[in-house]
Image 1: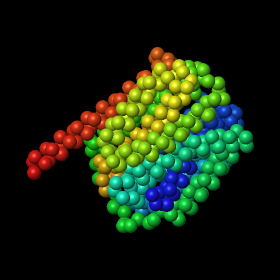
Image 2: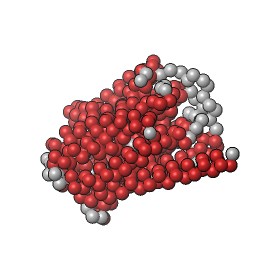
Image 3: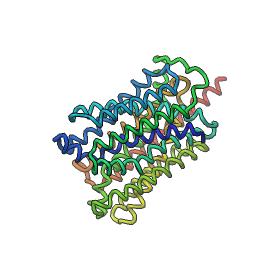
Image 4: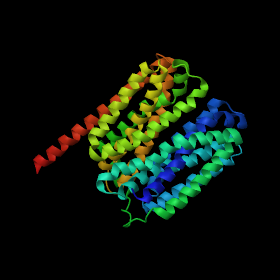
Length: 391
C-alpha cells in the first residue's frame, strides 16, 4: 500500500479520536460548565447530526475542487474546530465547535474513500478503503483511552488541544504524501450528482448501511451496563474489555477489505448475517464472563467487517463526479445508524423487554439489512439480464 494511503489513515485517526473521546469526558465537561451528564451527552448527538448534515453540504460545496485540496481544507476545518473546542468559554460554544468539527467528518471519509481507490490496483480498492478506516479503529484502541486519561488528569481542554496537534500533523502528512489529482476533477453538476443518489441501487445501499449500524450501536451504546449489570463485571473492568472490542475492530476492518476485494457481494451479505448472528448469541453469552468478553471482540470484528463492503458497494453503484457525494452520504448513513441505534437500545430498555433483550432485538436489524441488500442485488441482476436480452 502506498504511503499516501497511510496519510489518509492519519487523518482518519484524528477524526476518530474527536468523535469518540468525548464519551469518556462527560463528567468533566458537565462539571466544568455546570450541566448534567445527559446534557453533556448531547455533545455526542450534536456531533452525529453535524456529520449527517455536513456531509452533503461540504461535498457539494467542494465538488469542483481537486480532491487533495478538499482533503486539506477539511483537515483545516477539523483542526480549527478542535482548537475552538479547547478554548470554548461555555457549553453552547463547545456544542457549536463540535458541530463545526463534524462538518469535516463525512466528506473526509467520503472523498478519502474515493482517493484511496485511485491509489491502488483495481483488485485492492476495498482493502485500500479498509486501510484508511484503520485510522478510525486505532483511534478507539489507543487515541480514545489516552485522550480520556489526559482529560481526566489535566482537564478535558487538554485532550482537545492534543487532538488539535494531531490535526496539524495530519494536515502536513496529507500535504506531503497525497499526490495531486492526475487529471482535472470531473466537473460537478449538482443535478447529475443528486440523480446518482436517486438511483434505486444507491438508495438501497444507503438504507443497508443505516440498518446495519443501527444494530451495532443499539448494543455498543449500552455495552457498559450490559457488562456490569448482566455479566457481573466491576466498573474498572469495562475499559480493558473495550480494548478487546477495539482489537476486534482492526481485525474485522482489514478482513472485510480483503474479502470485499475478492467477493464483494458474498462479503457484503456474509458480514451482515455474521453481525446478526453475533448479536443474537450475545444475548446468551452475556450471562458468562468469559463468553461475553469473546463476543465483545467478535462484535467489534463483525461490525467493522461490514464497513469496506458497504462503502465499496455504494461506490460501485455511483460513478463519475457523483461518487464523492454518494460516498459522503454513506458515511452520513453510518452516523444516522449510530443515532437510531442508540435510541432503539434505550427504547428497548425503558419501554420494552429490558437491558438483557437489547442484543437479540439489535440482531433483527442487520438481518433486515441483509434482506434489503439481497433484494437490491436480485433486482440489479434482473435489470442487467433485461438489458442484455434487449440488445
